[in-house]
Image (cartoon, rainbow, N blue to C red; front, side, top):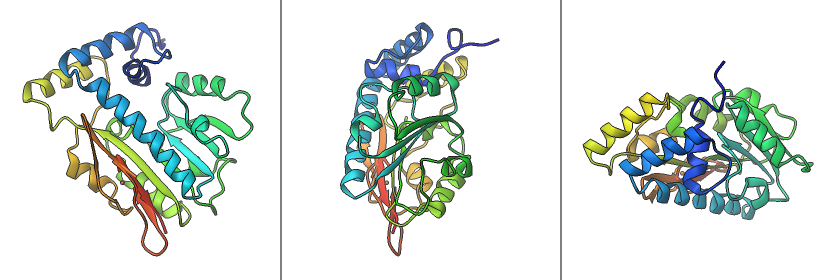
Amino acid sequence: MTTALDSVLTAGVYDHLLGGGYNFALDRVVATRILKIAPQARTWARASRSFVREAVLRMVAAGVRQIIDLGCGVPSVIATHEIAPTCRVLYVDTDPVVVECNRLHIRNQLIADAVQADLRDVGAVMRHWLIDPDEPVGLLMGAVLHHVPDPTSAITEYRARCAPGSLLAASHVSGERLSPVQRQQLARLFSRFGITVADRNSAQFARLLGAWEPSGLLPLPLGYATVAGGVGSRPGGGVRAAAAVERQA
């Protein structure tokens, strides 16, 4: 039986890059090797996390009162419900270890929950008791889309299911600013440890969010974000996305 102790926890690698404590020895080994190949990875992780924090604050300022943190990872540094304490927050991740970490972190919270689910299972996510489909929702996809081979249909379905006024914020790592040698070394490293990474460029990232209305990509040290590497909106009332934040009308 494979456990978190003998397999890489992708969220743990990211957590170690952020300086968090929710990681295992093998996660730290992989993070260290990533930094040897691409030293800017730590800067990207921090920039991505800062983007998510600002996106949440922007969502709250826009009147959003429920947030779904998709591919949430472990509660590094500061968690979404701590940034937006008056909002209902649903943490979603495929990894049971990650989900349990979040449940422990929110055990005294009445308006937060953590569930094990694939972000592409839109129906299951949107049916959760915390989420009111008739109210605007803030969707967070921070540092997760590059681990999903083809999230396009899911992103489109979220837009169709979300109420007008909903917002999407996403960040995505990219290797287009790395040398060919760095990209090859990272690809071998990820393959060795069974880590799925889709190396999309800025144009490909923007196309993922095409169903929303991107407001433009925000360059990050080793990737992009949108609230769409930034914020966007849906015609007729508004949904936006990429790192991006996008709004739906």
